Length: 177
Image (tube, rainbow, N blue to C red; front, side, top):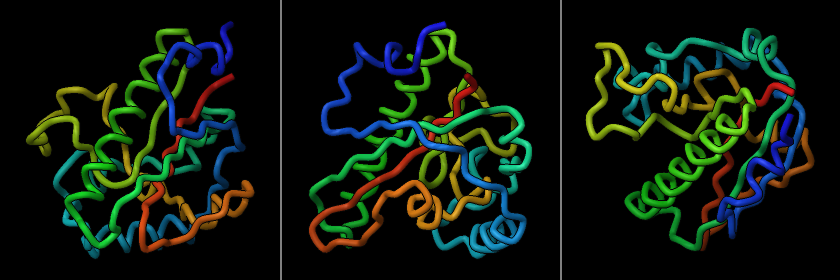
């Protein structure tokens, strides 16, 4: 079987950091907190797409039975974090890269699933609540599966911080060895 590093060798991941870490731990209290935050709908995506609740409803308890480890992808973009349009543009670049990473891994025979920040943006208009047009390409939200990214990043030795001149995005790809 091909390793994930070999599978991604020919990809242009300049500016991206990719490293293998353990799976996030399942924490039922965190799932409840994340679900509550999702229902508060501060991002405006709750009930609008298949990557966010209630359309997406898997959690780390079932996902940890399917996958063995995590690839942590990150990239820092120079932009004003208060400029919502610029941040969304950077997030879209990250999601496109995440989809490419997942496609490369799958084409190499590696079973995997990607998770991003916020709802899916693959389709201009999501089919939700009708069936997803691209269920293999949807990238569910890390919050939807009950992960506190700050706590997870700390657990794997990654320093998470807010800055005035840049935004760092972190995405996860669960892989089965």
